Structures are given as C-alpha cells and as structure tokens.
Amino acid sequence: MSENTPHLETQNLNAFYGATQALENVSIVIPRNQITMIIGPSGCGKTTLLKCLNRFIELEENARVEGKVLLNGKNIYSPAVDVTEVRKKSGLLAQRPYPLPMSIFDNVAYGLRIHHLCSRHELHRAVQHYLEVAGLWEEIKDRLHAPASQLSIGQQQRLCLARGLAVEPEIILGDEPTSALDPISGQHIEKRLIELKERYTIVLVSHILRQARRLADYIIFMYMGKVIEAGPAQQVLTNPQHERTRAYLSGEF
Amino acid sequence: MRWKWHYLEEKIMQLLMLLSFGLIVLCLLLILYTIGSKGLPSLSWAMISQTPKGGFYLGKEGGILNAILGSLYLALGGTLIAFLFAFPLALLLNVYLSRSWWADMVRLSLDILWGIPSIVYGAFGFTVMIFLGWRASLLGGILTLALLEFPIMARAIDEVIRRVPPDLPRAAYALGSTHLETAFFVLTRQILPGLATAILLAFGRGIGDAASVLFTAGYTDRIPDSLFSPVASLPLAVFFQLGTPFPEVQQRAYSAALILTLLVLGISISSRWFSHYLDRFSIQ
Image 1 (cartoon, rainbow over the protein chains, first blue to last red):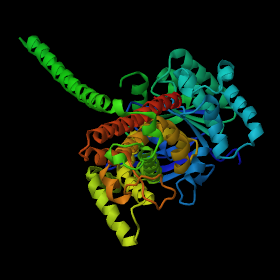
Image 2 (cartoon, rainbow over the protein chains, first blue to last red):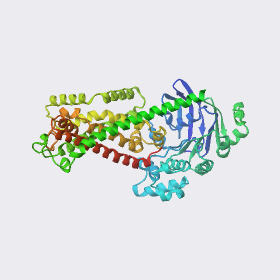
Image 3 (cartoon, chains in turn red, orange):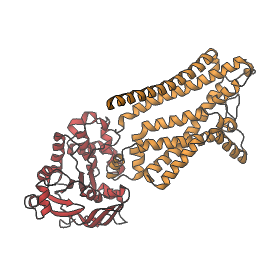
Image 4 (tube, rainbow over the protein chains, first blue to last red):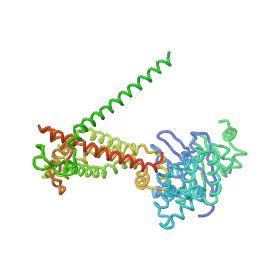
C-alpha cells in the first residue's frame, strides 16, 4: 500500500435513522499512523460516524447509509465485501468495556481461534504477547483462567484492547474509551494508544477537549451531523478557521 | 397531610405483598404436608425398587419402579427433543429476526401454544398416532411431551437471551465474529445459567403431566424394553391408585406423589447449584 493512499476515507457519507439524518455529506480523510479525534457537542453525529467506519451502523434499527467509506482505497460498503473482514480490520474500544463471558485467556484467544490466526501450541504465546502490548500481562499472569468479569473496569478495558489487537486489525476505533474509567485507568489506556499509533491508525471519539489536546494528531470537528472543520490538531486547536469551532473550543457550547 | 398518606399507602401495599407471599407458602406447605403425612407411611424400599406384583392394585406386594423409570424416560426424552428445537429457535428469534414482525408472530404463537391444556396435546398426539398406526408407546409419549414442553422452553430461553445486554454480542461482532459464532460461543456462554433454568422449567412441566401421556404412552406394570412398548408414569400411577376403593392403595398414590415431588425437588436443587456454578463467567 503506498503511503499516499489515505488509510481511511469517507466520500459524501450520509447516514439516517428512520427519517432523521444523522450525517450529512461527510467527506474526510483519516491519516495513517496518527491519532485522529472526532470532537463536537453531544448529538453531533460523532459516534454515528465512528459506527460507519466498521459497518456497526448496520446493527442499528432503521439505519441507512449512503456514500462510501474507503479502507485502503476500497469501499467497505460494496456488496462484494464481507462484513466480518471489515470488522476484523478495525479493533473497537467501546465506551463501557464488555469482556466476553469467558476466562481472561479465552477472551484474547477468542479472535485468534475464530479466525484461525495461530496454531494451538502458539496460542499461549500469542495471548501473552497481546496482553503485554495492552499492558495487562503483569497484573493478571497468575490468574489467566479466572473469569474476565472479575477484573476491574479499567483492566477490562485493557483486556478489550488486547482482544481487539489479537485479530490483527489495521485500525483502532475508540468510542470515548476512557469515559467510564477512573482517571488512572484512563491514563493507562491513553498511554497505550500513543504507543500503538506507530503501528495502527487510530480514530477516537471524545467530548473531552483536554483529552483531544493530549492525544490528537488530527482533529475532525462536527456539528449537527456535518463536518465543520478538519485538520492537523495543532492548527485546529490553536487557529481554528471556522466561527463555530472557535466557539466550541472556547467552551461556548 | 401528604406524607402521612404516602406512609399509609406504603404500609398497605407491603401488607398485601406479605399476604400473597404467605398464601403461596401456605399452599406449598399444605401440599407437602398432605403428601408427606399420607405418603410417608407406605413409602418403603420395595416401593421404589420393585415393579407391581400380582394383586398390587388390591393392596398386595410390589412397587412403582415401572412408573418412576417410565416418568424419567418420558420426561428426559421429551425434554431432550424439545431442547433440540427450542434452543435453535430462540437463537434464531434473537440473533437473526430480532424485533421483526416475524419474531413477534413466532412469540405470539409460542405463547398460545403454552396456554393450550395438556389434554389437548394428548388428544392431538393420539390422533396422529392412530393415523400412523402406532400403539401407545414410549416414543409416542416422548413426542407428545416434547410438543408440550417445546413452547415453554423456547419462550423461557428467548426471555433469557433478551436480557443479554446488546453490547455483548456487539463486542463479538467487532472482532469479526459471524452471527453463528456469536450465537454459539458468546451468547450461549452468557446464558448458560438461564438455559439450565429454562430446561428445568420444561422438564418439571413434562414430568408432572398426566393428561398428555394418558393416551399416548399408556400404562403398564413392566419396565419398557423398547421405544415402542407402552410405559407407565408417576402422575398416572397417582391417578389410578387414587381411583381405587382401597385405602392402602390410595395411600400408595400419596407416596407416588411424594416420590414425584422429591424427584422434581432434587433436580431443581441440583440445577440451581449447577447454574450458580456456571454464573461465574457471565457478564453482569
């Protein structure tokens, strides 16, 4: 893949829930190996946009999507594309972590098993690797076979990160992944994400401006289903071009 | 005096709830007391280890092993077959048809089937068996019980699956799971405790039912040696023995009822223990 093809791109993306339009003509380019943050007031469509990027929008009732989402230049909504392939390529961190109803080990092994990504005797090694990358290994190495539900919520979110990385995605999507966590656990996750951007393209939804200032390389500001402004974080945060962005950044709404 | 009225309202409602709770417990205790006091005296090892000997129904020797084993065969077989259909149906309703018109229609049909009296299932099974030229047999009884248990089990499993937080299957979809993988590896794992309860509910209904096996399974003093021989059952053992004019035989009816109750109680307790054990892995 040439470095010039954008990793992820949307073209004239429209999304509807029944008769209400949630996204209006969204055309954005998400740069490779950077952290892109989608910000904006609640109800502006940022979560909907994220859901369009891994076709999760199709799980919503009455939802309809028009336009294209290009992953490595290929439209993920084209009928020839297998939806499970699309989702495998993008790891998802939800607002509230939901471990699978199994042991810690099996949570990470699940993706490896269903996609036949490694042989049985490599499994343990692989699970350990992804738990290390997610920064969870040291804390749980003695109770790998305990139920995942016994972990603290912060540990669960890191487990979800390890589980998502295990299916070897190219992109990590996060829907306010730290909002349900305590500050220390939130910092853990942020630290991991900064380490991970060397190898993955990361897209986060956030409504915390301070977090955007800490993490973002690229910012997309949305308002009422439209992209108002998008650009490198430095530029958008310090010198916004649009009146509304300026108002949002200064905390007017 | 607003606060006083609210306080009174609270007290009255609490009293009503306590009353209905007490009523239910009272009924249960009365039933247990009746079958216990009348059944225990004639409960003996011979009762549960022997089949009826000659003159058993006149108060002579023998036991009801035929009915105990018969009931277990019938209920286990019926529950197994009902499960083979109910479980996939419940998954289908939730994973593939969730909240569609079709799913609502299926649920409505199941609710109607649930409400049909078991004698109707018995008559239906009997009609089909006559049409096929079968005699009253273990297989006929099992299939009729499966019909009776199916809607109960399907709806119970359905309700259990509906209580799963929708974000849980989504977590699996996000990893690129197909619907099928999500249903069998994730949803099933999550609902195992509830699944055990649903199966037990249907089993309890099946083992205690007399009307549906009356025509379809028949009654015999022997232990069935094939799927096509008739088979006895505990509810019918109670029914027939209560209908005799001899007090000692009537007393045996109570001990048959006691055995049936203990059987269901034992299975309930062990399945509760089992589902508690399974609950460790479920996500709250």
